[in-house]
Length: 297
Image (cartoon, rainbow, N blue to C red; front, side):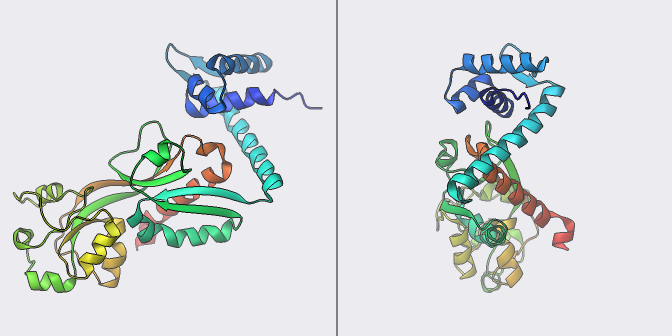
């Protein structure tokens, strides 16, 4: 018989290692911080070695502790997967909240690929641009457009976005868009997360950002309006790619500016579900492949 540490000690160690805090581990496991500390000390006593360096307000895994955690996390994931398979007939659920435009422009086609790999995964898809559903644990994962990764949450960058104007070929011709300064007489479409001021500076223009004109909360709907000839819109690389490729949109000027990233963000509880983290890593890998020079060649 193998002499294994108590499961409660291993769970406490795993949670503290993942979250970087005894208090956060306690909240995740619904026990007191002193219970977490006691369980980890018991584990260290059994192993005969310290797993964490304890500082005044923080903890850090020792080198040996990090190596041990990699194996413990893998074993706990395997146990969780086996239990889910046994109790749910192999079916699992994943709640995914997506920025609407990115969902339509990039995500949906890739979900079909993953569905063929994991046919027993039931994905519940919702649309939002707010961080609240992710931080509150109402969903497992969210995709959001942000300037930088959110503090305190695991996140994977799916794309590095550039910002530039687009319009329909017909509108470009009718409005005579030959140089960036010609935008002074164009109809500019607005989106709350995309700044005309930033692009004007990048293009060397001293124009004020429009305060009037059509305002769109949904970037995909704005691009549909743009393709229909309603005016000129700012868009990001990922969202405009399909319209530029099929000719519904054109990029009248070369100037662009760094705009931020689409991040895949894990809710605090999500990494307790191995199938959620597996999906997250797969999606991040798909985004890296799309961004590789070979993919764009």
